[in-house]
Length: 306
Image 1: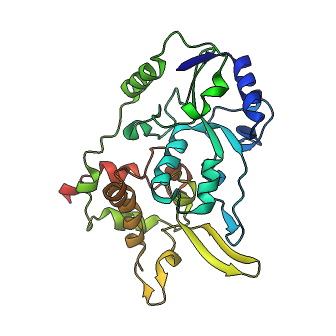
Image 2: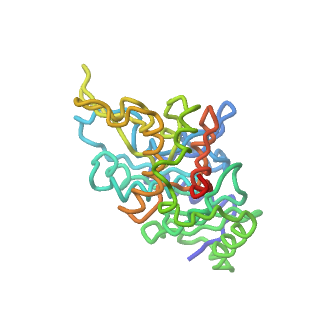
């Protein structure tokens, strides 16, 4: 069921949730939208956060010799593209990585559906911005907040007014897609070419900083190493040369090989193994790339004309 809440109702909803969870929200601080602890709904910004909130699930660095702690957190203000990234990561690492799993099972995400496409975004190509999988999903139109919840969290909406239009999310999705269209994938996993010149072109100006991986809501690769404080795991990037180094040498010595691997993983390998593209159209990798490499070029490139 879909409920129609006022801003005051959203405050009440947040306070209900705060009785069971530590509440974090997207909040404007020093000119950026970041996630931090909040005590009131009025603190929540509906702008896209400056970084993906995936570090609620995968810490940037942590000691893996410690026992994972179950801390109940609720995160409000997550954009649909970021949340969809977590469901994609679930397919690979949920119930395999104990640290990710305990956090995933104890974190409640409240996503806001976009009413306008963010600059460069292409979430419509991957089923956005209205999601089929969510914890609590919010659509803010005018003075109303339309809210729907997974059955696990339906209890938080008890007592609020049901919406008169139970198709509001469906209608919004159709209108959003009509207004912004989509980049047609057209079987990108079959069209991509191993020998494409695109990989070399990207390598000519990529600086191997790894920003695309770190900002991506679907990238989950880590490095594991020992230091004087314990055994650590931290975010890693397939663009970095050390990512593919082994005792026998480097299996991808050229940057073009590593870039090709990145895009093949997202648009071919994950599709073949998990049935999904490892991308949500959030455009974060483009936003954060210092040399403006655009993942959309991989989708729209005419490989047959090379």
